[in-house]
Structures are given as C-alpha cells and as structure tokens.
Image (cartoon, rainbow, N blue to C red):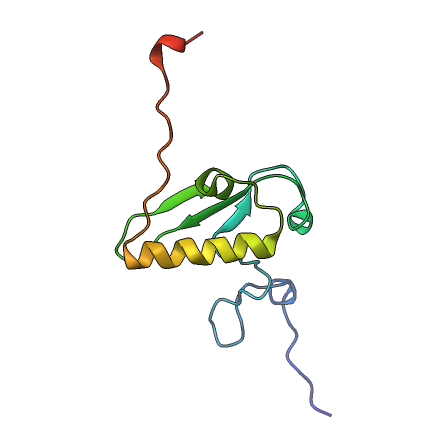
Length: 112
C-alpha cells in the first residue's frame, strides 16, 4: 500500500492553480464582453428585461463600452441576439468601420 504525504490545510482548500503551476480558470465565468448592469442574478440575465451592455478593446486600439440598446436604437431581448450583435460590432471595430452612435451632449442650462 502506497502512503501519500499528508496534505496541509492550504493544499486541501480549493486553489486557483493547477498541478502544473498555471492558473486554473475553469471556475471563472466568461462573458465575452456582454453584461448587464442590473441587480438581477447572472443566471437570469438571458431572460431578464434589462439592457445588454458591451465592452471590447482590440489589441493596440481604443476600448469601447456601450449599451446595445442605445447603439442599435432598439431593445435587445435575448442573450443570443445580444451575442450576434456584439459579434457584428466586434467585427466592425476590428475592420475600422465602427462609429459609435453620438450621444446628445448635456444642456448646461437645464441644470436643476
């Protein structure tokens, strides 16, 4: 019978490192630049009624953070539709043809 060396408490708890010493990111969720800014649980995002937001920064380029609803001028319902639109915008950014929708400047005289 082969006896293994006793493990310390630190070794027994879940470690973010694999046995080869690299970071193990299997427990971290990837959102591919899509997110919601509401208080809904992440697991309900695909069906929650709030707006989808998108962020993307190509290598060597400037970063973009925008609301898909504002950018497209319509409400995006599901996650699949949001992913499709995000892919389209990502492609346009990489090719240099993306121009974000202009946001109307705030009127300083309308300050309450």
